[in-house]
Structure formats: structure tokens, C-alpha cells
Image 1: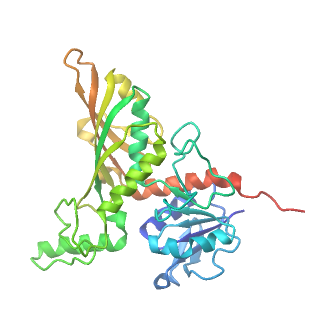
Image 2: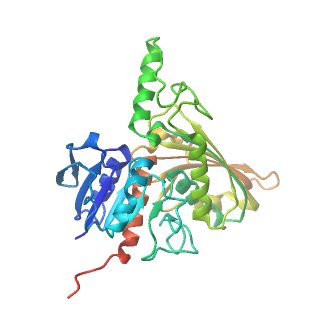
Image 3: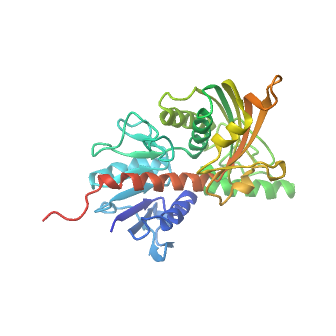
Length: 346
């Protein structure tokens, strides 16, 4: 029986994480739900167990085998060392720790060895593990699959970022902006400091609480960590999309040589990727919501000499950003179980 603490349990990501844990082999664990003081006292549920969200205190992480940080970066930075000193395995979904010495970025779905950084695996001295950013995970999974068909020369991606990636406050402001525009009222701008509703933005206002540049840098770092030099560098831009939930990706890929289109389709398909063959079922953030897989549509630029082959192609993909992140975090915890002591010392 494990004891699991979830810091940031009342956030959107915390809610998705609780559902993922409830459907995993860790569902029988003893859960402690933690958050900032404004969420203290809320009733919540993990699996069949109803519990109360507690404020984080000095002994909150005592005897916790795993601590998931699913809140803000600030919350993680304030408390992760407390969890570490208590002997807990720290999993940081906020991304605050990905540049801390010894911290590993991971995605167990990738690679034969099971982890993103193939050169390193977690041991008893690993201070924390960062489950990879869900956009980096989706891009890495697609690139790794295509590389099975042929070496890649170039990869470029545009990531359409939803409001839910930045929490409930961003979701609420996008909703309020939409209502305000329809009723010809002034726009709330506390989060975006720009009109996010009915608009596509490559940058936000100076007073925005969201930093798209930092988000882009994190996706790039995690992609590089997962690839460990196996893939070409990623040309990347992040666009704030006027949607509440779900990532969408436009990806351009150039292969070293022309490959049969059927071989490309076969390499893409498989676990965690749903290859959409019909134009009428085009992937979208709406279609991906609640789905466990990445939805992807392959659009090859056919070779003029052989219409059945292509060396350049486009991918249009979509995924449930919160669910993908939570799934990856749970998989990381399952792989890290081997580092937890089993039984008791006599």
C-alpha cells in the first residue's frame, strides 16, 4: 500500500491526475490531497475515496511514497524540497524543476529503455522527475514513429496552445472575454493582457501572467531531453489559440529519402496514436478531448516520379493536453516503483 500526496489537487491538472491514478494500479493507495490555503476544506474524491483538501503544512509529506506537484511553479518551488526530505519520490508536473541539477525529464512511452533520456535512468540519488510537457511528448512520439520509416532531415511544428494549459484563471478569462465581446462590453485582461477570444496570438501583453516564450522554451527543452540526440532539432512556434482545451499541432517533416506512403502510415500507427484516414474525421482539439490517444492525419507531398512515395509530409494532430500530461505522470510513477522499498525491515 503506497501513500500518495497530490499538491495542487484542486487545479485542472490535479483533477485529471486524480482520475488517471484512480484508473491505474496505484488506485488502492492512501491519498493525501494538498493545495494552497484558499482550497483548504474542499471535499474531493480519488477513486471511491472521499477526502478533504488540506493546506500544505510541515508534516504534509510524511511517509508519502510519491508526491505529485500539479499546481503552479511557485507552489512546487516552495515545497518540493520538503517532500524530498520526507523521503518521497517527487514528480513535478508544473515543470518548475526541469533545470535543477540531477532532475530527469521522462516519458515512458518513448524508446526501448522506457525513458526519454536514454543515457540516464532514475536512481536513489535522483532528486525529482519531470513528466514531459504534453506537447513535447506528442511531438516526440510522432517523430520517433516516423524515424522508424526513414531518418529525418528536418522537423518544424506550430503548437496551438489552449487556455487550459495555464489553469482555471485562463479558462475563466477566455470565457468572460467571449461573453463580453458578444454583449459589446469591455474585456477582462488580467491573465492574457490581450484579446484572446476569437483571436490567434504569438505573444501576449506586457502585464500578462502567461509567458508564451517560456512555454515554447520548455517544450523545446523537453523535446531535446526526450530525444537525447536521436532526432533533428525542432523548429518551433507556440500560438495562443482561442480554445478552452486540447492541443493542436501542424508539423512539417522532411525525410532523408522518399518512403512508401503506406510504410509511413504503418510507422505512425500503434499504441497511443490514432491515425485518422478520412478527411471527414479530421483531428481537432474538440475530437481529442477525453481521448487517451494522439489523433493524427498524415498529408504527404507526393513524389513527382513515384506518386506512392513521399519525402516531405505534413501532420495535423490533436491531443487532450491535460489527460496526456496526467497519463505520462502516472506512467512515470509506475516505472519509479522499483526505487521504493518493498515490505518492512525486520
